[in-house]
Length: 268
Image 1 (tube, helix red, strand yellow):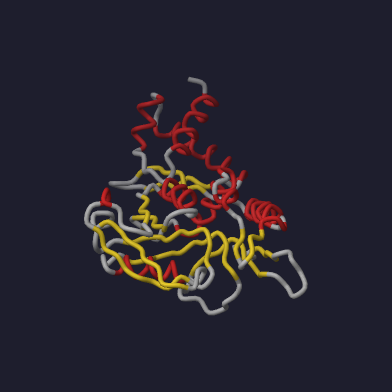
Image 2: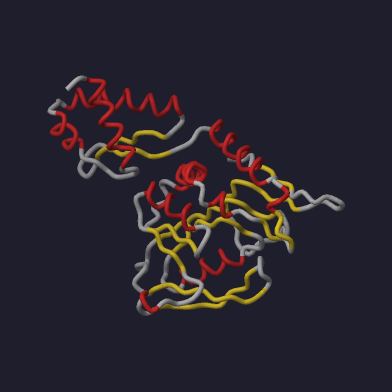
């Protein structure tokens, strides 16, 4: 097999299985090459990922080691994504009144979701998370993409218990976006005690939903090691959770203006 074709197949398998650890023997046997040739191929692939800002290859030596591709995104890619989201969200027709904004097409846009997920994978990789957790509904596509890229299961917390979930645990929490008490439920067999989770959601106002997720996971002795949110309202300033990572801030309407203001999280 020609070297360029071999590298193409190597990159395809790594990117199709993000964060999966491959034994180097797998590729040596697949391509019928020596470890030295594989090392050269990986170096070229790694340079390509670095130049395009799409991730990196991690090589772990020793027993239990191997090779894995970790998705990422460049600073330029993040700024382009933020600008694209802000342009789309700035359409005045999205304002539904009562402080609500139409965002479904944003959160179900495959291209935007894939790039948002890369941001969170880049931030949270290495925290040892066993699960990615979200609450239904609009955060599911983003959370699913993050879970896929981190190679861990996705857990979806329900607004109401479902018979098909089996035995569940439920809690009541205060939702800042709706200003009322709501309920969320999780199947008892969805997570294992003593594990770690990353929480992903589409929108946060006061942090009530994310606090609820944190509390219900605490019932299972599951530690929340990271929180990622696509869009966060600037007000109220005091949130019910801390250490969350937003992609965009929603600044709200200024007096006398109809258009909602948005800004990028410049710390990304």
